[in-house]
Length: 525
Image (cartoon, rainbow, N blue to C red; front, side, top):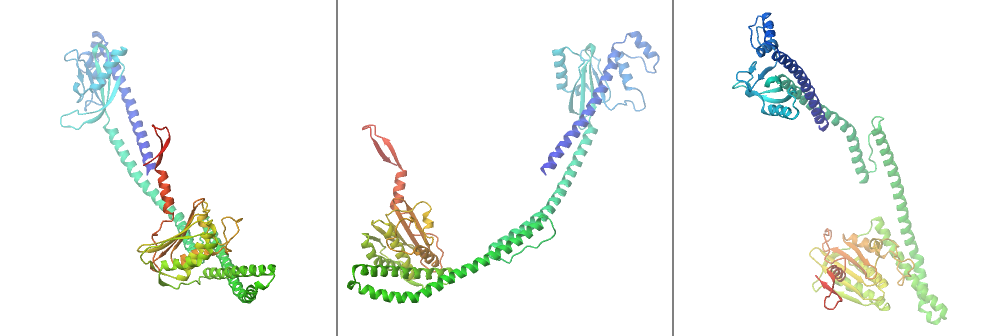
């Protein structure tokens, strides 16, 4: 539409300019010839005027009438020209002459002003000027677009030619109407062509997008219909080949994953039997270690510790294999979260004493009932507490319980080494360690937090971590109070309140120089 509009305006302008210029040139030519005849008549001597009149059938008149008679000619229809002529002599009463309907009052004032300005400045009397005006030639008539050409001639005479542009205006109006109709038709035609091209190009692309969405949703048998041999057909062929290869690779990965899960499960189960036997023998040796030599007694203690770690690893591997196989289930029961926290803290007290760590419990006075699997939630809390003890560097660990109408949350806060940026997500990866060079003091398997997150997700909850180097870390477990409900928020903040308050306080403190003492003091807004 923009292109057609611009092209239409350009064509109308060019046609208008061409028609008006050609008409103006013809008018100026006619006006010049008439002025030459008028000037020649005004310059004739009386004898020459008489001679000119002797050979003519017209009566002998003054030179101006004789000139107009020569310009007009004779005929049944009188005035044979398409234009009107006015010879004006404002200094001599009765000295003006006109043809047709024109009157002295029809002369545009701005044209006379332009002629006067030209004469005053340059002294040239016969330099023509022109304007286009709408002039009403008869009372009750419509104004007509007219080209008026005026010039001064000798003896104070002014010659004005009135060339009507009605025909040209009607022709240009017709041309504009035709261009508008043609432009509308062209826009409709271009719209139809664009629609056809769009349907031929965009429709296959849209089908490919829909097929890609269905393929991404897991429908690996999705394929596109191949029609023709153009680029879109080759695109459909490539898409089908990609879908086939993707389905094959996914199938291979599923088989590999299934083999891996089955292998882990089988190995874990198969190791149970020899581990039980080794465990029985190790228990006998451990119980009788006091009768052994020091080296043998120490070996029995080490074997006992590593067997316990081995059993814990096997249990974690079996639990991970259940999650991978989608076989993990919940044993839900309405439980007070405070009781679960107290049991987990009780199981961790012995380890905390060995590391010189103490717990600070912040429990609500009202029961925090929630539909949870107590065994799994207690395992989550033990993992969080063990992790806080190991990385807390002997400092106090704060355990906070909070609840609202929809959710219950437990936050475990330590004041140890903390977490670097980005580690708050990696900490839940399997076998990930923040510092590989740091020796484990508890003997964990590296799967505790990964299993904890799986347990939280199985409940429909969140397990999130926050940490800053030098300020410790905090893990927050949020669970819905009603099984199957969707969490919208947590009653506890992920960032510890004291850290958030300190950050806010620092952001509103401005150092100001005390004018009295000349020392830097802090002013809080």
